[in-house]
Length: 149
Image (cartoon, rainbow, N blue to C red; front, side):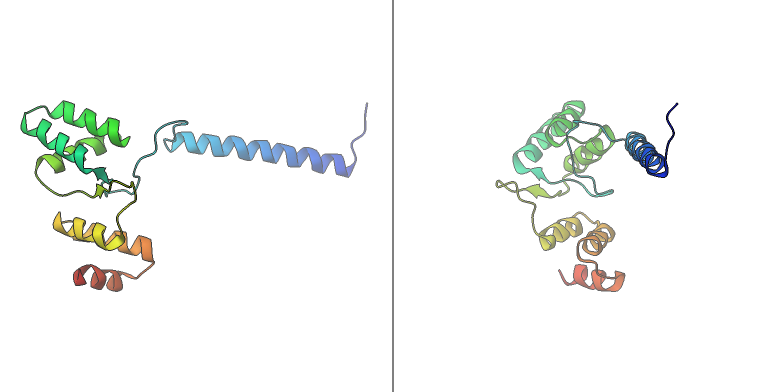
């Protein structure tokens, strides 16, 4: 029967800790809803993702024609959003409200443009949250920035 010295025991404990940590991370990711290989989408809670202008137009046309389910399906296919978020975005577009649009180059609009879009949609509180998250400003500074636009 082999005898284990202090180095072997430490090596064995280290291996067990690494394997345990990997299992914990995988479990936590699965529990949080991570889907391997799933399409990534806009994940800022409460904010709608940028959507290409032509998709917005298609959704509005489907909504006006009474094809709400088809409009939601289109949004899900084009953005990778879940059902709840796609329904919210579709209803927002169907009601004629503005959502951030994805420019032709695929770049996300600058902060001021996104804040203006949120203000135009009546979502001032979320605009302040966006500014705070992207700049690190305090509440009063972010509110002043949003109000200045």
